[in-house]
Length: 217
Image (cartoon, rainbow, N blue to C red; front, top):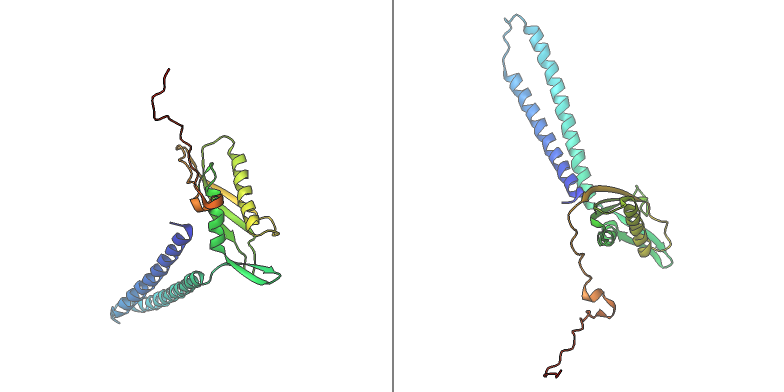
């Protein structure tokens, strides 16, 4: 489950909690006003004044919770419907690339490295910007000597992959966060598909020649 999905779920939980809290406050306030105060009580005026103060504060808090929930819902809907795009100007016109597709391409290249267990890259696109200002890469590395040199290699691989896709652009600044060092024995990386190999042909293993008839000493 990705970080973006978890963040979206947390926002919806926050929205639901705000609505429920506002409904609870309104319900308690209504029950408070249903309680009758006798004019013959010793602290009648003080209780009446306190009830008015509590009601005003409760309704204000409930209103703020509802407004916050509405703003949160608008933010969730707008973030899910508004896509992020990289925009490039070419001699033949303007072209847009969805940021998620570029992130997936770079992720596959980085994850294919022998030193990397897995990786997740996110392009940072400032408001009204056409190209990313930087990339944030979260990864897990296998336990190997000189992890600092490995992370430099990972950084260079991600930046080079970006320049391979979009030549002539500024080098992509990559901020790396190593979330975990994996001590398990790494498994074999998946081999490229047959279609990805030159000529579209699979490699054929040459079997040793064995004669089919008796051979004398």
